[in-house]
Amino acid sequence: MYALIATPDKFNKYNTYGAAKYIKHIEFDEDTGEIIKAKSVLAFDEEKLAEDEKYDGYYVIVTSRHNAKDDWVIDTYKELWRIEETFKVTKSDLEARPVRVSREDHIEAHFLTCFLSLVIIRLLQKMTDWKFSSKAILTGLAQTCVSNIDGNRYVASYNDKAVVEIGNMFGIDFRLKNRTLAEIKNIVANSKLR
Image (cartoon, rainbow, N blue to C red; front, side, top):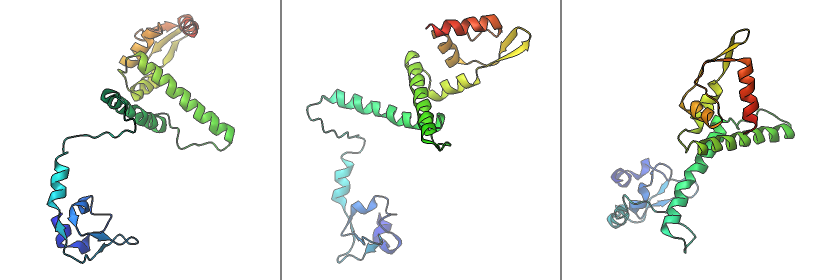
C-alpha cells in the first residue's frame, strides 16, 4: 500500500489488488484504469483499515430471507459446495465439455448421458454415506473388469474399497477373483431385479 502512495505511476486499477480501498483521494481514469493525479496528496486510510480489521476471522453470509433461522442459513450455505462440485464433476470427470458432436439430437443425447451418469454417481455416493468421491467411484468402476483366462474361467483384475462396497450393496462380491461364465450371467440377471 505504501508503494502505491509513493509511486502511483507504477499502478493502475487492475494491479492494485484491493489496496486502493485503503488509499484516500485515489481516482482512476474510467477508460484506461490509470491513476489520475489526485488534487490532494494520496494518503493511507487508517480508519478504513481499522474498520475492516474488526471483521478479520469472521465469515459473513448475506441472505434475502430475513425470517430464516441462523442454522438454516448456515446449513443451506454449506450445501452450496455440492452444486459447485457437481459442475466440476460434470465438466471434468464426465467430460460434458467440450461437446464433440454437432447434430442437435446427438448433443442432447450427450448431455442426457452425462446427467444420468451424474444422478447414478450421486445415488451411489448417498448409498455409501458419501464415503467416496465421484472420482473414486468412476475410477474404481472404470477399472473393474474381468478377463477370460481359459474356456469358462474369468478372473477379476481390479477392485478397491469403493467397488467392493458398491458391489456389496447389490449382492456382488467383487473380492472373488475367479468366476465361471454362468456365475457372471447369474450376477447380471440378479442385479437387474434390484
